[in-house]
Amino acid sequence: MNYPHEPVLLLEAVKALSIISGGTYVDCTVGSGGHSEAIARKLGAEGRLLCLDRDPDAVHISKNRLGFLGHRLVIGQASFANLADFLQERGIEKVHGVLLDLGMSSDQLEKSGRGFSFRRDEPLDMRMDPGLPETAYDLVNNASTQELESILREYGEEKRARRIVKRIVRAREGNPIRTSLELAELIKAISPVRRGRTARHPATKTFQALRIAVNHELEQLVLFLERLPGLVREGGRVVIISYHSLEDRIVKQQMEKWEHPCTCPPDFPQCVCGKRPLFIRVRKRAIRPGSREIARNPRARSAVMRVAERVLQ
Ligand SMILES: C[S@@+](CC[C@H](N)C(=O)[O-])C[C@H]1O[C@@H](n2cnc3c(N)ncnc32)[C@H](O)[C@@H]1O
Image (tube, rainbow, N blue to C red; front, side, top):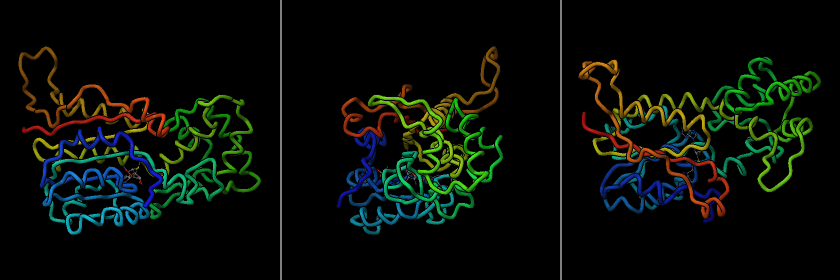
């Protein structure tokens, strides 16, 4: 079977998990199961793999792909923000390692029919979990000018937010903006033409911003990080691959805080707050894909991987 999604930093991520035979690992963003399949091969005869994804299509694809694990595979639809409940419902207290490969998969972009791509004419939906209450259509057609502008600025870091939102608001006064291509064309029409192989589509940042807003992606990541320390065994690793600076900043700051939690004033001779490190960073610097991987898989170009190890308190 061919899977359109090529896993990013595959060897590096699996190595960073430092998998022990017989351990219990969680892939919190199973997608089409590329990382999971590589993890599964290292688990030994007794190891277990727990997989989750918000997107029911991803769960369906990966259930088939990872079926060879038999009863050692536990897979279900859930957000990683609810990892604690996912584990508790299955009677698992702590795990040996956790992987998060953020963003979206090529399957979602190319095959979901949910309007993630500005190159396809699909309904403006953008929900990873079809049970979420609000779609990109709702935001684009009903959000106030101010709300839309702050979404584009904050989540897309789009410098042309005001201009783009003005155009959207003018267009929707006539008829609602229904599809991804309609939205992309509106933005393209007011954007300077850029040429060259690396020129990005002018709607790239708007689409990223809407997807982040619809799926509450940053809030979910913050919740996950807050709840994680209680779920990882001593010596267990967390490996997180992010695809834009907003996500990576949150991960980086949390990992620094885990390592240096002490809140005592710097001039105190010794710590009195009693806060001890929860994780230490395995490498201080982030790991990025090399030029060969990027040439083979351009999706990898913005990837940044960070790794931390749970320590005894
Ligand atoms: C880059 S893809 C993962 C690809 C996967 N590593 C593979 O090798 O096929 C990201 C996946 O994360 C999922 N996702 C995003 N936010 C999520 C969340 N809060 N909880 C669970 N899954 C999430 C998406 O639905 C998508 O399938």
